[in-house]
Length: 294
Image 1 (cartoon, rainbow, N blue to C red):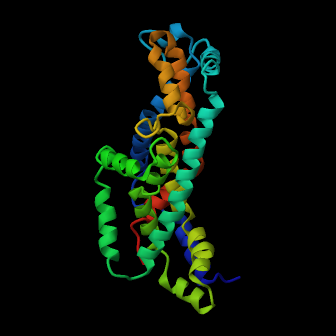
Image 2 (image 1 turned 60 degrees about the vertical axis):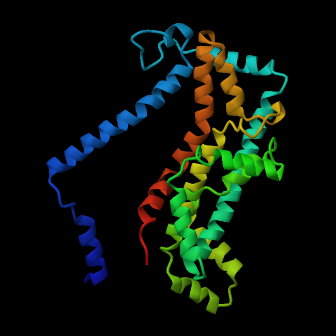
């Protein structure tokens, strides 16, 4: 049976090797392994520290792996939190509510704004995107005072809104989504309009599914920021305090709570870590495609 040109091309592509020698492959593998071990070491150390008894935590030289695993650090953590006049579940609810609300609002609003800026021409569109790019150069510390003044004028201080609403305006999320939407052909949108699809239907049924890697990446960044947010500048009522703030107060007691502090570190980092592991392929795809245009 004679092979078609398409099958021949696929076969040739499958047998093509990168333009480098075996020595180059080994060298790249060694370098990637070294960097991988370098980045995974702090993670392994934090996980093992959470299960170490107090004498192993202060052992010198420190050991990476725990010798006598124990759950006492977590038991002490829950005992301490159970004695608080605000329940542990309340702190968890506050953090989950802020994280969910801020992330959902960011994904929806940033996706809608990125779609308009990417696919429609209107006065001030390029200027607006230039402003977004400029804001990437500033850290949150620069805008802390203006944010506080705005929240005070709006009367949102000591409420969830003081943390959730500013999270909607993360410039990195808007930038990644806009760049990813740029890769979608305009002819696809025009074909949908010819078929009678409205703007809302195009956005929900075409754009959002196609940019799933991008908004999953934005979700990861947002969850990392909001889950670890203490929000102590805006929230003063103990009933509204976040989990990182409450856990941070526990480890300020000194050396005696070093084991509890290790458990706190693992407890705070577990959610963003799991989120990243589940969506890491989407992060790579987003970063690879964010600069490609039609």
